[in-house]
Image (cartoon, rainbow, N blue to C red; front, side, top):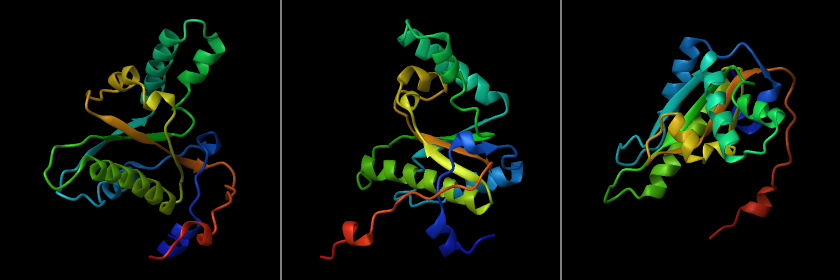
Length: 187
């Protein structure tokens, strides 16, 4: 297992199309989900939950996405609908991070939404630490209420994103990072 600081300094996203099986074992998935739930959570509200898409569930989710896409795009070509069907099938495991807020006098909704984001990032980092490639993505369907309803989300729930996890098929290249001098100021 890599040193924590080295891992955080070198972590990079792996594109789902560059992932192959195997994905995490049941025990590794439990570790990833446990780490996803271990984030800052002012008020102990747990304003997030997780949906696991693995095996055939990825194809069933793709059917939901494709059906909604076809309904909203009646002139869509068959090839375009097929692309939508495969949205969650590249990686062997996809975790949906669902975000919701609860009324609280001391914890604003924004802070609760940030907790869901921290949860997603923790899962990306945990998967990377276990030796897998991981990528946090959204896409049009992450914001479409009909798709979200098809995935079982309630009206007051949002999708913070999908965490795609699998074995990298090739080394991942880094992207340019902003120099600290461009993003850090001192007060």
